[in-house]
Every structure is written in structure tokens, then in C-alpha cells.
Image (cartoon, rainbow, N blue to C red; front, side, top):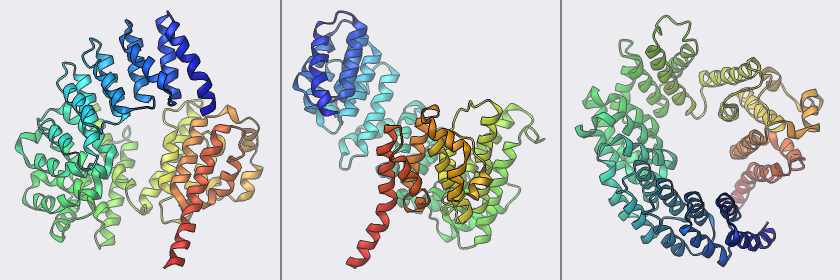
Length: 484
């Protein structure tokens, strides 16, 4: 790849100097960015393209600078010159490129802070997200000081930009816990209180410092019960008094469904010593999800708004159920139903389905079940999708599958003969998921070994990496025990 790039880059640069058609110049810059190999002339000529009269070419040049290798400060300084460009699209791309280069420099922070005052809300949105991303870097107090006024200005649009980054950052966003907790109890932020709690749940156990305050809030006022219970469940900790109140609210059938769902979710997260209560909470959430799946038959969901509320409650219930480790039997049973629903949908609409990757995600969660048969089924579904690139399986046969099943199945034989007929991206997703499961995916080892010799060369390195992940951990444990 590197040798090919060395040959191609000089030709691209020569064409870029002499090309008169704007769309071709744009395509050349995009190609240059994708190759992204270190070449002194590449950055120089790309920077010159920032003065191109055509908007699309300037935008492509800014994007390429974010991808090219070379000195960061020189590229950021060049990008800074287009921060006042008349085109909103170019200013947005400038912030994206600075973020891609690595905003961990004073110059980069200065450009992002400047963009926070941009007249266009989309540019500001991008700048806020870049600044939030920078806050995840340890020691970046300047960035956090710049972000705090934006975070606390009670603007839904600005808060949405920040929460999106926090939700994907997880424990890295621990720095935001104290600010978010202050906002949670501030009456000024009542309108976005649920959004604040939702954002805190993504930080998870790293937000443990907030637990004492959340315990007090939950005990002192019903006004904060929903939000406090939701966050305590995601942290996985609550004191005895708060746990007792959560259980009593869950057991109170006169309470609204949304409050009881929050209480049940908190019970699953906290995992109190009473196993019976945990089981009841899982059963209740499973019922909510299954009822919603049959909303068109249920008398209580008459209007579109009722159905939307039911769907929202069911999604929340499902999220609580799927976050369990290990997965409860009701949750595993629900996952099986949903895996079958995906197949039914595929068969009913002639192979067109919107989210086939959901089958991969659901199967991976099924592997967490403490029931061996269900865990085996989850791995078998992943193997099937890896081999076929297609979501059409028989769960009963997969649950009972043995090595012979994989050798004599006629559908698999046909797929092996014509591998390009089915979705390579779905196969890739299944292979990567098996790799992330580690030693619990041992059952897939012989199949992954086959994939390392697969006709489609794109899948071979991904299969090798997955095999290493599955086989490396046991070896590591062995060496540790020997050293001990």
C-alpha cells in the first residue's frame, strides 16, 4: 500500500496543478486525503487549493488537510484562514478537520473557541462537539472552562451537541459528572432534566461520586425519583434506604408505568440481595416490551400518542433488560423472539430489511446469558451470519447445531461457492463481534479459521484479528498464574 502510494501521489499532485475542471480537482483532493501518506508536497499543494475559487474544491482541500500526515500546527494554521470563509459548509469542515488532526494544541483550541461565536448554528454545533471531545483529554481545564457556560445555558440545541459526545465517550466523560449533577438540581434546568439524567446514564459506573447526592434526592422528593433512579441504576449502586424506596415504588401498582419502569431498571442495575425482586423486575419489563410489540391488539393504546408513549416505554424497558450481566432468562427469551422477528420480517418483504445488523447485536447479547443453550444459540447465529452475510436462519436448528450441521447444510454450500452474492459488511460486523466476545466465542474458532482463507480477501485480516482476540486472553491468564 505504501509503495503504491509513493508512486500515485506525485501523479495526483501533478494533475491537481494543471487541472482546469473544478469537479476533477475536487476528486483529486479527495483521493489525496484517502491515501493520507506523508509527502511534503501533498500538504503544500493542498494548502494552495484553499484559495481555489470553487467552493467544493476549497471544502475538499480542508477535508484532505484533516486526513494528510505531516506537522499538525502547519495544517491547523492553514485551516484557520478559512474560518471566515463565506461558505458555511467550509467552516463546518474546518472544525471537523481540526478535530481529526487532533485538537490538543493551543492553536486548535483557539480556532474552536472562535467557531463557538459563528453566526451559523451548524458550525457552532460542530465546534461544541469538538470542544466536548477535547474535554475528555486529561488535564484540559481550559477546554472545560470554555464549555461550562455553554453546558449550563439551558439551550436544548447546545446541550444536545454536548450530550451526543458524552454518550459516546462513556467513562472518559467523568469530568462532566459534577457539572451535570449541579444542573440536575437547578430549577433553571427543569426543562432538560430528563436529558441530563439520560446523559449521566452513559457515563455509567464512572459517575459513582454522584451516588450519595442521588440517594438523597431520591429519598427527599418524588419530583426527582425518575431521574435519580435511572442514574443510580446505570451506576449500579445505591444505599439501603434508596434501594428500599426503589423497590417499594416498583411494587406500588398505582404508580404510573413510566415510574415503575424506571424503578425496575434501577433494580436490575443495583441488583439488590433479594433475587425474587430482581426476577419480578425483569418479568415486568419483559411484559412491557411484549405488550408494545402487540400494540395494535391492545385496548389501552387507542390513539397514535398512546402508541408512541407505549413504544417509548418499551424501548426504555428493553434497554434496562439488555444491560443485565449476566442476562436474565426473561431478557434472553425476549432476545430470541426478536431474533426470530428479524427473520420473519426478512421473509415477508422479499429480503429487504432496514437493520440487519440488529441480528448481530442481539445475538452478541444472547451470548451473555448464563443459560448455556441460549449462549450457544447466540454464537451459532453469529457464525451463520459470518458465513452467509444473510439474516435468514432457523433458531431451533442453530440451537441444536453440531459440527456436521455446518458441513452438510445446502444453503451454506451454495454461499461458499458464490461468496460475493451476500453482504460483506454484515459478515465483517459478525466477525468483529465474535472477536470482541473473547474466550466466550471459542465455539467459533474453527469457523474463523476457515474465514482466514476466505475468497474475499477483505475478510481475512479481520478474521485473523478476531481469532487472536479469542485465543489470546486464556494464554495471558496462564502466564499470569505461572508468574504468581
